Image: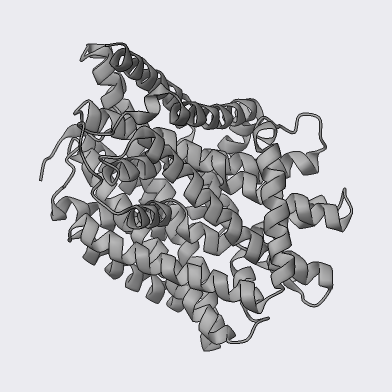
Amino acid sequence: MKINALLISALLVSVAIAVWGIVDPQGLGEMSSSIVAIQFESRGWFIMLEASALLLLAIYLAFSKYGTIRLGPEGSEPEFSTPAWIAMLFAAGMGVGLLFYGASEPLTHFSVIREFLPESEAASLAIFVTYLNWGFHAWAIYGVVALIIAYFAFRREQSLLLSAPLLDVYGSKAWTRALAWIFDFLSVVAIAVGLAGSLAMGVFQIQTGLAGVLGLDPSAQLTAAIFVVMCVSFLIPLRRDLGEGMSKLSNLAMGIAIGLLVYLLLAGPTSFAMNTIVSGIGRYTFAVLPAGFSTTEFFNDTISTWFQDWTLNYMIWWLAWSPFVGIFIARISRGRTIREFLIGVIVAPTLFSMFWFGVIGGIGVYNVLDGSGDLLAVNNESLDATTFALLKEFPLSYVTQIATIAAAFLFVVTSVVSAGFTLAMIGTGGDENPSPPVRTIWGAVLGALGLAMIFVGDVGLVRSIIALSAIAFVFIVPILVVCLLKSLSKEVDR
């Protein structure tokens, strides 16, 4: 095990946050919420500007003269097949979130928008906003950060660290070494806190699902049992080879999710769902770029709060996860061209997300417009119960609920496994294959942080804690982009 100041400092801070969350969860949550609200008020415009700029940059790089540059030596080949690669990056990046928010997010947007617009227009706009939050902007943030890491690691033969671009472009000076250390330290904290939040949300949803299937009341004992089983499940793969463990788990999780999606499409209001997807894709395609520059400066408090709680929170959330997902995607993407990389990372997951929300979110909206169910009331009461309430409207609901629980469980495990590898890489100076003991230590720390988030108990406060951990990356990512453009320009000009 390679011990260094970064590893010790990051572990100490992560453990301190975990202890704070366990001892005083409300204090941690409320402090984070207060600071994030101030940041959103003063810098919300910059966050949206940055997310849109990264999307435009990704489009430019994919179709420019730089698109044919390979992420590795000339002639190198990808380590994983394209389907396995996409499944792994998707499972690490968003899997559990889609299960948690599949029906609940469109319904939440709908309940706000229908106060100002007719219900039919509110339903369409709710799907569009969901696409905006989970689509090209999110994966452009992931994709550009991952591209920067992969380019400097495999093309420039540097480490898989966020600091590598800075040191490579500007040299090893006193100020660059200090700034590089800060970059890596902050990335560790953001990864650990962001992943812990998703772990907690996964536990919340699995608990709700299991309680419903088994006819139990949600309890601390049930939460504890789920948490313990989950910890054991991600600690075992952390001690094995990355490709062997992650590929199998992520493929299984994606297979269950796709099967669930197809079943709901065929068993539900198929025509309505397909209309939702087609019209949603059309609206999103032509409005995504202008919408990315939207703020709520001239709207009332209800709209402003809704925008901050969802769209703005998502953009900072993707930034929070960008070091983790970026390093992990870079790790599994050696040998691909920049064009192939960006199209695969941005387009494929976005299309799946659009189909997912189009089907599940569309069915949820249909339930409300048709007046045949009470999903909106369930959603207002508990976001993590919405998906299971929707499944109960269909035949074989017992089977589909079990499948959803299994997929959520696997998505959480794959996320923690990939995060554990990533944190171990950073903590050991960029080692692509960190030792099992280091990975296991980080797995335990992630479990402790996840327990702290569970104690916080409120999904909104958990999202605020994640957002707080990512504020610094609003300023770090543009610096990394400058490093990439400088290096690409020099390579092409040589």
